[in-house]
Image (cartoon, rainbow, N blue to C red; front, side, top):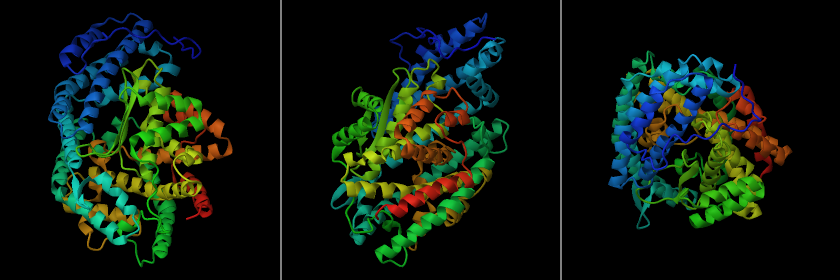
Length: 574
């Protein structure tokens, strides 16, 4: 058996793909993929060379897709950017899925696959076998239709603006008004956004109904009874099951919801209110205005850079490397898609961070979160296999969520000492809200796809039921329609089904990393970088273990960690 020596020099880089290849065009990609399909494999070395050459070609195609997606989300109102993205989705992605399946099958059926070193290739081969098992050519055009529907969802959201204070504002720009001390203005701003969302509620429900039907058909085509079980298999969740997700829901309900509602009651009392309303959740309890961590994207970048340099010279250098090369698009504007993301451009191995900054503390959190993803991308960019230049999302989100907490000691780059404490408290309180929200979104999707013939009325009723189970103690009187459609704002439900529980699993890993850092900051950072540098080359529990973390997310683990959060909240000034 061919063994992998981890101390040996890496395999020679592939030179299979021409430097000037236009990977946005199938006619440019096809001859190279056909060469790979037609290649005769004589031994394990030949199979390994096939894997390396394919990796280089896949990286070129993935970067082409990334750049088109980035262009579309930066300018959802740009018809050329939209058309180029859709052309790739319609003309290239279906062909990539088909040829990818053929190559996957070529590898897993190759008699020399058993001669590859399992310490290096076991995870890759396991994933390829699963992909081969699930692939159905009939699903390729259906998946294309789903992607197009998700692109329409982005367009609808990107076009949403409101008029407030005589100015047209995007919905992310409106968020700052929920922190104002004038309750009437908070209510007016919240209601303006809610009313704007309701204008498109039927359109969004229409899109989702079509997505639901298409996804159910995909599952049936692959031999599954429902899309939930198909998607868990497709996402290669080898190390946990839907039943484990239900244990996470149970933990959120038993551990986090009581603490969240206790904080809700304290908030209502501090504000002198009989009950919180949706516009009362962000305002400072002492009547202070919103935290103002920066003005403009340049200041956000400068201050973030100082934070990372204060933490670790290597992290600081990695962050600064993104200040050139079109790696950052940070400020909110009309026509820009909602949300934030980090996208690794796999051929150049250059990360891209996208967000909608409006000068709020949550923008600082988004910045360090997405920088954590970028650090992950850069730390494992050395791997010659593109499949290993990332990791399962449950661990990828540890990279980002840990950074939200590891930066706590350095918030003085953005704030006074007093405001830094306030920011830390706000973040810890938000964890008590976030974990139940994750449980809500995940449980909602379980119900949706296990009951694919449900009506819109039943779907809305299930959302309200789950809000009763997991939600904050808030009075929605007069805004019941907004509550019933609140799930519309969660883009993962539309474009990334079932990709959300990962945030909860990862948050528990991040809290463990935070506790490590309080005992030994340098050791914690070393563990952080050690785990991230492994990419996806190890099973999920091994990645956690490499970072000194337990892969556990039931009520017991959640209880231990949330108890530590509660202790910290008891010491931080309100």
